[in-house]
Amino acid sequence: MKTRDKIITASTVIAMTAATILPFGGNVFAATTPTWTDGSSVTIKRIIGDAYSLTNNDFTYTITPSTSNPTGATGAPTTKTLEFSNADSLVLGNKADTVDLSFSGMQFDRVGDYEYVVRETASSDRVTFPVDTENYYTVIVSVRNNADLTGYVAGIYLKDSAGDKIANASGLNSQMVYNTSAVYTNVQVNATASGNAADPDKCFEYVFNINDDPSDSYSLVTESTCTNSDTVSNGQSVWLKSGDSATIGVNSSQPTKSEIPIGLTYGFTKKDTTDGYTSSMDGTERTTISKTAVKVGDTNYNTSNKTTIDEHLDATVPTTVFRNIIIYILLAVAGTIGAYFAIKKLNSKKA
Image: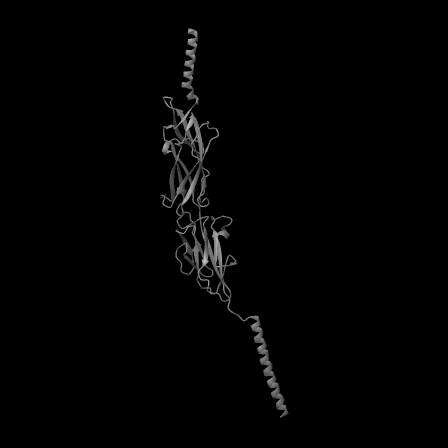
């Protein structure tokens, strides 16, 4: 019996030792809320370079778990949105904003390193504010047993797109930085006047429409002798006479608020449609036109960003029927006069 007692005691000791040691090797344990040693969030920082105009925009980030993760993790975030507004800070021509990406709701049933790749995948105005597809980050959630072996602790660190660990990343101080520049453009309008009665010095008024961005004012450059301001906003007028051209939103090496974000819908509407002129825009008879602005250098730039307006007026001339009636009257008058002199000559001979 003593031998059997010794065997039971040894088995018990081995089992207790295994229960104590195995958790360090990744053994399964009860899922509880972890103790975070260095915070449970990282920070997404978004910079928009060359920002000076419309900056109301949302960027979306997707969080994808690595296929090599240990099983048993739940509660990881899947998406996050960072919202920009016109009120966000502007520093040296850049807009910047941040949002925390929290992993605090996660639970685990085993120790190990859990990797989550964070990418910027969407922009509410992707044309003007393109997504940053170059930069992405990996969040490493490291789960280990705590000192008394009753639960576990979790910590976070980051790796950049090159796979390098961000040395100073710790909790809320961790930052994933995404950065692309806004894209802007300009639009042009040219005026001509045709017809035998067109006045080459008449200034025509066209209302500039840019309803997608009604609050901003854009630079207006023209050599026209018509009266124009040096800026124009939605609903304001551009005055042009035959041979004039105007550029709205001038591109430069140092961007200013005067340029137009690409992708916006804009157009022109003739103000006075009762002046007798027939208006054509881009070769089609009409008094209003609408287009979508593209970036300078785009293959559609000449059709999307340039508009030609022609004002045509001819003087009133006799119609063919009226001219024919005049000819008949003149012939009749000439015949009557001829007959008068013929009769008069005949009477003279008789006398």
